[in-house]
Length: 421
Length: 76
Ligand code: FES
Ligand SMILES: [Fe+2]
Image 1 (spheres, each protein chain N blue to C red):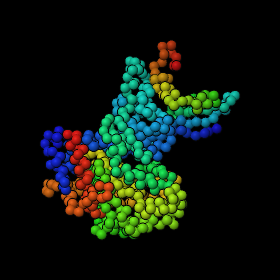
Image 2: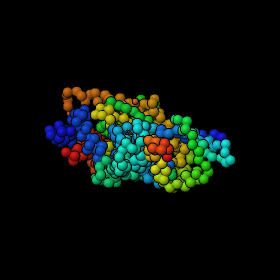
Image 3: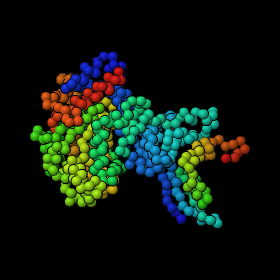
Image 4: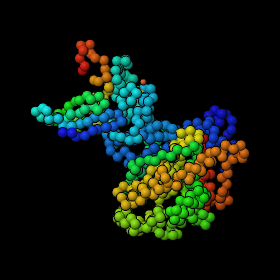
């Protein structure tokens, strides 16, 4: 960290339309990011539907930090550090379970699922019980929940979750609005994909509208999908800076032009009649039609939650050149016919034999190797600078293939890194 | 009469209804050690009504199982 602080200002590494390659490769910068981004801002951890019953728990993470998300007997959600307060063993190992208390496997200390130390074997080895109070599990300082999405922040103070989400909270609203019950069920389980690449390669790519026609041409042609054209030079779709590093590929202008309900999902209402009927009953025919035309959001919530229409990706950095993507299918509570299709599409595109994520991952790893080259030193993010503009809400937008989102991500990144200096 | 196994990453027990006595009781077998304990209907009803966390003091390992035997040789 000190080398970064002492020498280059962040403004020398991050310019308006280009960034220095060392930002992806320098271990000292990665360490500084952990402190100033991952252990300070709001980071997505999990969804309340992953712990539906009292005493349910799931093993989660905030960057490299191991976290347990629990629901106590009263129904309250807790974010605890998965580290025994004795000699640091992982307390929970199973990805999920139901238990009001946890027992560390190393020496048998027990903890309640709210983090309290309950006891240890052979307590005559410790004089008095006073230390017990201080030896509860570590906890994530702040926890915020919006529409069932659980975020954690290691900073005791700072912007609220709603301030952090800002305009991007609308993406979560839109996602939930497509569920007839108004609730999501994100308990389908998470696939994990590890890549040898810096986490920011992934964040930048999620709302990069320039690459799909190239990188994903094979899956688009096999699936006879029209999505590729939405990311073309003729497209009326927009790239958008939602503020605070959150970015969007807004395909609604195209879907509205075409006016086909469920066109965004590559299907028609007669294929999922129960779902459409449920949504119409819940929202009214007119609004349901609008929702089904507009489709699901494509939004990257900085720094780690990517809402990819029917999938959610969680980005977890493990090292400067190693990142895990956790993927699950979006499921609407109580809409089995639609859920089955979303699950199938998820498995097809990002499952073990899927094309979509494999194609992207190949690009991440090639980028990571390329960025080590001695020359040129810069990554160019100029695309569409001459045509970026403000929309009616005051957000910076560009054409579908422009690098408005990438510039927005780096502007926010620089603010965070400078604030921590 | 076998009922089933209740297993987590922390513990594994088999529970069944035992009819050896004058009335039925729940038999709990710790599958890791073979150690067996019993709970009768009144004890179980009490457990069902326990408020949140009331069982937690019993989860202190030093309370019964993992402690030095008392000087008189007793274990409780
Ligand atoms: S490390 Fe957990 S009990 Fe010793
Ligand atoms: Fe050993």
